[in-house]
Length: 465
Image (cartoon, rainbow, N blue to C red; front, side, top):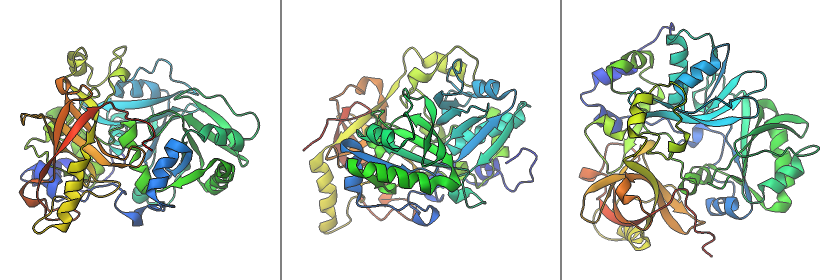
């Protein structure tokens, strides 16, 4: 997208055309995620079975193919770092080749627009991976601010008119990932610190390697390289990993890794309100991801701003640095000393979860179906009410499902700080009000309350066997 491109209806046009934005996003949008559309991505739901694929990142190793679902943006030019510093809450003082960042951008109100991985490449280019809303925001700011930068987009496969990507991306994760990496790399393996990068050669292909983990343990490697050479690299990793119990992971396992890692992906971008953002909404197309987000769950406020979240809500407080001027700084300075909400894991009561399944075999309307391993049914934005024992609303639960490693139903949540202590008892309201919404994946059902215990995020109790 470019700022002078001829466009159809804008996101602002869409907002102006619907009586109530929350109703529209709750009932009538398709959602942009490929998680429920196997026809949009050439990665299977399972290679073997999702239970063993989940266990692989805890017990041996797993290989995920991330080449298709994450959009990317490449930024270069004299003003590239200045622009990124203006947008990101991060300190970029040490940004350079070999360094990566969990990059976070906020609205003027201090609420998150998105987060992604920022790579500093050796040629002076900056590669940003994932979070379509944040990439859109960066592209808009590049044009609207008159920065001397060049922007190049490589959208996810489902939204990419070329039908291919520029780079493949694999995630090798698990306790034996290091052994596999050392075995597959040509020559002396590079020693890579957490969230640092290095070049390596695999199957004759030069790749870029980021050290980080998908399941909250930091023992993984994200490997990227030229898209046309992906199969040679994949084959070499699989061959090297076979003696170590390496499994390929499908989409079902992939999208459950957040339950253990604590990553709340794709918060609703805080761009739907505020006069200062009108120009941005007029720039965004009505059929952008921002126009297709799908709200779901028992949490059902009237005001779209009630879905917004700050970096502190999402567990990113340690990333916010006030050593530079960035969009949203003033607002975040007011809450930095005492953030009112915190990110936690909720461990659902097993008997209450079994009661949800039992309703499928009883007369009458059942409770909302709890699908395995992924139970949240909103495409990107699922939020359920979290209440204290007295019934007071204290937070929002999201990304819920089953972990074969923990033998538990888990969800991530944002709760009021006074209820964030591990061991605190809460309840989650499961199912939508009034029998459910018009979303095609939502059947007629009734609501119920599920007891849960607050736990840390990331969450792990070790091997339950």
